[in-house]
Every structure is written in structure tokens, then in C-alpha cells.
Image (tube, rainbow, N blue to C red; front, side, top):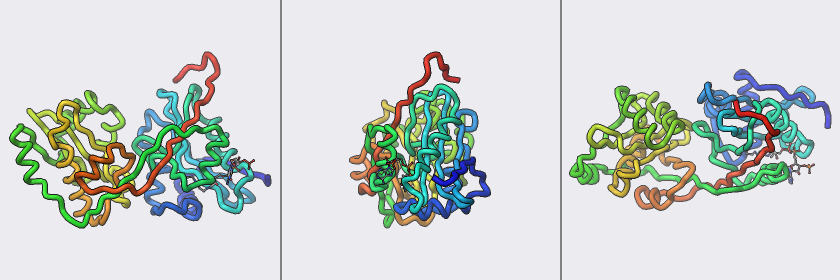
Length: 310
Ligand SMILES: CC(C)(COP(=O)(O)OP(=O)(O)OC[C@H]1O[C@@H](n2cnc3c(N)ncnc32)[C@H](O)[C@@H]1OP(=O)(O)O)[C@@H](O)C(=O)NCCC(=O)NCCS
């Protein structure tokens, strides 16, 4: 292989990275802004270490790979990766992966592909990226799960009034979140869905107006749904969740409809319901259909004896 130089990419490499990603990730369309969100947004500075590596061959960009690690969890992720078509099968992606591994802190036990909490492009590998599938399996990655993205048609507004009246009889109120809800959100996520979804709810709260809808009973949150926390140009739904004791009352569908109505009002014709999950729920209440299938891959790394997580 001709001399390959690998370095960490900077934000001013974005035009180069976008060109490279666009000519190689043929199944996806995305703006430079969306790519910048994936590669350079630092979603959890205290917990995650992120880098995008750029491989250059004879002064021209040849490949890229995003990699992130969450040392406290002993886990790392490969984000987007791509090598120019005429430079494939020369070990460039392998060299990028090797470099990412060398940079990770000690104690990483598992690497997952693309399903990065809070900042994912896709929730796994679309197997139609067949070369990537071959590459990952050659490196020892194992497919352990499937998931899908659904699509919702937004041609008509969802009427929530009847269902809202029905659940109001059970003292359940539905409304858009507002900044004063922070304490209630902290309590709810501490009890039910944890820090990652608390973080995503925070991203929804940063939008104006907040793209977060809540169901409350006795002044406590019992369910939530969010949208436009990332990948906004795709009309991106989620996450959503209902506390176990409040399930089966029809709260989730009302919250889903509010989010879809918001996205319709923002000009989207369709919405992506990513990383699903309960297909029947979305199919029944919003006539969603499977749009894409993803295979989730992971690789267990051997950690030297005595290596501690930091
Ligand atoms: C996947 C991709 C990054 C691999 O890049 P690469 O630089 O060609 O990979 P490497 O040369 O390091 O390949 C290492 C090994 O993986 C396997 N492999 C890679 N491509 C393969 C292919 N097309 N068919 C079979 N095996 C393949 C081989 O075992 C290869 O070793 P070998 O050539 O000595 O047999 C490249 O094909 C690509 O950019 N694809 C399009 C983008 C994409 O699908 N990205 C994933 C979604 S984000």
C-alpha cells in the first residue's frame, strides 16, 4: 500500500468529509450540517471521547472513520466509516480501525457499530452496504440483533381531542414541556429511563418551542415523547417512553400524535421512527411501515488482565 497518513479530522475538514461520505454512502442523503452533528457534536463531553479519523493517501482524502468511547461503561462505538471506491481492499479501513483502538482509553471491552446513544446516523448497519458487512465480519464483529426504521406519512393531522378527553377522565393531562419542567424530568428519568434518555429529552428542550410532549398525573410525569433531537432534516422522532404503571391506557398514542403533528407543521411530509422496537404500536396508531432494516454488530475485545476501567 502506498504511504497512508492517518490524522484526526477537524471541523474545517467538513467539506472534504462531506464529499467523501456523499460519494461512498450511497444509500443515504444528508447535508453538511447533519454530518457535522454526527462527527463533531460532542454529546456528552464528560463521558464520551470522540474522534473522526481521516486517512490521506498521496495527499488526497482516502477514507474516514468516526470512533467514540465511553470508558466508564467499557464500551466503544464505530460511527460512520467509508473508503473511496478506487482505494478499497488495501487495508485503509482496517488501518483506521487500528488507529481508533490505539487511541481508546484502557478497559474497552466491547465495540458496537453505528448505534451511538444520542447521536446516531443509523441504529446499525444497513446490510445493503455489503462491503461493510464483509469488512466487519472479517474483523470478527458478530451480528447480534436487528432493528428497523419505520416511516410515517404526515399527509393528515392527527386529531388527539377524543383520546385526550378519555384519558383526562383518569386525571391524565397531556401538554408540551416547558423550561420549568426540568426538576420533574430529572425525577422521571432517574426513576424510569436513565441518563441517556434524560440527555435526549434535554436536546428536545433546547428547541424552541421544546419538541417534547408530556403526560402528567398528580403533577408527576408518567410518559414522554420527543422529536427533532437530532437528524432534524429527516423528520426524526424519538425517544418516547411510558412508565410501566401507566402503560395500556392510550397515553403513548396521544404523545406520538402530538410529535407527528409538530413535524407536519414544520413542513415534513414523512417522519422517521428510528431504532424500533414495538412495530405494531406504530403501525396501529400512525400507519407506519418498515422503511429500512439494520443489523447490529458488536465485537468483544480481550482486555489485558488487571486493566481497570477508568
Ligand atoms: C466498508 C469499507 C469502509 C471497507 O474499506 P476497505 O479499506 O476496503 O477495507 P479493508 O481493505 O481494510 O478490508 C479489510 C478486510 O475486510 C474484508 N473486506 C472488505 N471489503 C470486502 C469486500 N468487498 N468483499 C469481501 N471482503 C471484504 C476483507 O477480508 C478485507 O481484507 P482482504 O482485502 O485482505 O481480503 C468500504 O468498502 C466502503 O467504504 N464501503 C462503503 C461505505 C460503507 O458501507 N460504510 C458503512 C456504513 S457507515
